[in-house]
Length: 253
Ligand SMILES: [Zn+2]
Ligand SMILES: [Zn+2]
Ligand SMILES: [Zn+2]
Image (tube, rainbow, N blue to C red; front, side):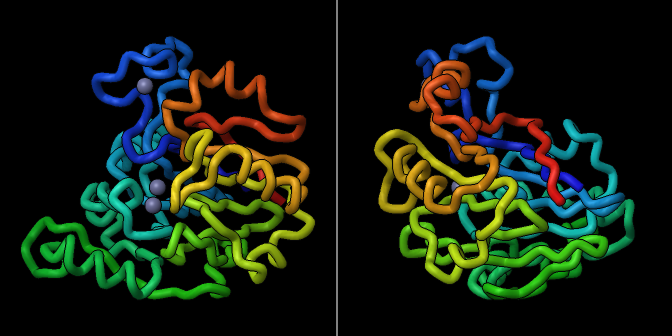
């Protein structure tokens, strides 16, 4: 069982189009970051976590030819814009793809991808399943607990699967979520840049949460190019805290 990080950048990706900064011009492959996404792999089962603008490239890069479902953490474009590319899976597997999301996100999907909910031939077929905080998703026998993360004013999904937790687009973690993060092996948590914003943690804020949750291992992701090249930034992190990169595999128990 493992979580495969398929993208570790914030919404513009790294490199950013037209940017000549040291991160964007780095030749280190770890500085090539697609938009944030992941895949939970349990036996032969595959649950995609988000379907952003790089979804197609991420499916090709991992050689994925079958999906059991997609969990959408929230409705922002960098997490949903690639959902049209679920079509090959629908055709090959002859299914409507299960998409697990909050009711608010389901409403957005039906508006923004209205054509997917018509009978027009060749459209992506989405089987939207509304979920809420505290619900459990089953992935080949593994229970995935959906947790609330506050992304600024927006409550969104994070999750815990076994001894791993995945929390993207974090600004604040409610007490009820912190209670579910005890005895954690691996914590994957977002941080945007050194300053943070109204809806994203800064590096120091993410490190504060890591110290409080005290996992054995922590991995930062959803990164801005402004954090600099991978090697420089990673060297400044405390023991037990790593910098995520595209393709990183995190085992869980
Ligand atoms: Zn840059
Ligand atoms: Zn977001
Ligand atoms: Zn995001």
